[in-house]
Image (cartoon, rainbow, N blue to C red; front, side):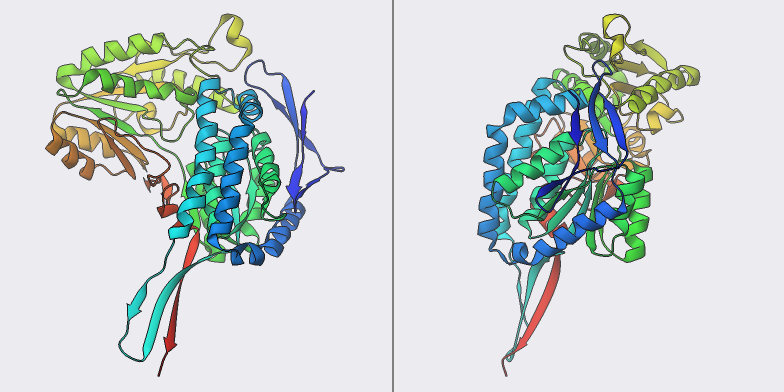
Length: 471
């Protein structure tokens, strides 16, 4: 039976009544898996009112108390791993192994922010005898969150954990295509002891629910993850009300491989374009390879991409729209003269019932081509050769985006030099490991603000200065 998905407001399910519903078809067989209530401004208003009513009590709790509740959320998430993983795999199409990792990351967010919020200190300022000045970090109040379809559980956990740890209450608008695990997480939060109204979820479309959330006068901070076009609209709405926005938007990230690199590891990093079928904003979708090793790297990458068997080692596209978009980019790449090395088609045969595309590599890609400049959001790798270090930096920066970059070289001085010159919010040198502790966000059109790490707590709090006369 398809799941019936309704709003979660003030600690209870709000029946859809006469609301219209959206029928959701899964990515594996395009069969109906859920019916989602299409909420509107009235549901946003109800959710914001519940969040506002709960805000003072939640903010007044000691950070250690909030932290313990967040740790309990993490424990229960791991306890119910099978249920969450199975549900999100059915909706997003992710490989089971990928989703197991995603669930552990989601739990880690609650553990991490539940602990580090106890270290969110202010400062004292010396104004001389007779005056005592200090700063403190305070929550905004109600935070509106709009999360995407490509990582519903981890994206919701990432923002919610930091916002809740800092003392805010939240109203979350998940993607209408993948709402189930966000609703499950909201219920789990209350089961863990977080008071009713602190976490609320309104389901529906961006035009009806998302826009109302951004425009609501009692939403004091907006956090959005998604496309650049929608991010601009969110930023405009927040700007009209003079409230801050955290925007994690698109990417067209460069992975730069110099001739002296460890090619085994560099090639392996290129294959991360297949994680989540390439439906990730941080995907290293542009592979820039120095002339001397270009042909060897291209051959090895193509060979390993061919081994990523759809269904077994490659997930389908999550939505019908994204499937159509990737297939269209295959046509665009061919028309613009990119050389197809492998892939380049929707999957035929038994798997054609699902939204599968072939893992794809294009070579001889130039900066004028759309697959060099535009975010495909699929398992599509664009390979471009370069000659000098300056060429590599110029190509890497020839993008409206600046989310992530990779650099591969045995020359440590060059590694640091190139990393400092690339316009990206996160540069990974020789496969350096990132985690929930490392701040994440972009330059240029890739967004504003930072998620993850201790830095995120600064974005979910506002700074107050207090000056006391002791004279």
